[in-house]
Image (cartoon, rainbow, N blue to C red; front, side, top):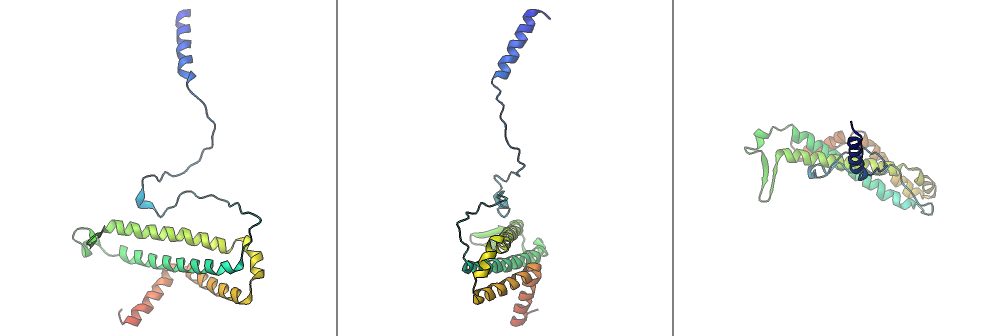
Amino acid sequence: MSDFSKKLAREYIMKRTANIKKTAGEVRFVKDRSGDEKQWGWATQNPSTREINTDFTFNPKNLEPLARSLRSSLIAMGHALSAYSTFTKVKSAAISPDGSLGGRGYIMKIVDIRRQLMNCIEALSAVTDTLYDEMHAPHWNPALKEQGPRERTEVTQIMNDVEEIRSNPEEWAGDVEEDLDSDNGSN
């Protein structure tokens, strides 16, 4: 190869690589959920730690509404699980000739109903896990000592309900539904 050819090749390579910029960065493996509006129940990546201001005072009176919210969310998740379980056992062809249900502006495909119920379950599961972790967080422990006996008893009763429901929300909802069915005289 001649000196001219080598010089020409070197200049070509220099021009091609001159515009390339190197950037250092963090590599994160995050699932791309953009454009998938049907999967709204699966939240985006949340932070793994919290930065709590040390001046903030945790008021023990706020534990009761947190506990009530947790219990209600678990009850809702149990009923959503029950609805999903019951609905998925029904064959589409047995309840719809066109694969859809509803009418007058509220028409949904059966496949979409199943997906929406699962989204509800996933969203409620994430909320209940978050609230449960918050109720057991160490920053509430000093506040528990300041709680009066009445508040402590109410929160304890609610948390006992939470533990019972949390162990198997679908079974708990099934028991409630059986009670409703027996009260209404149906089987």
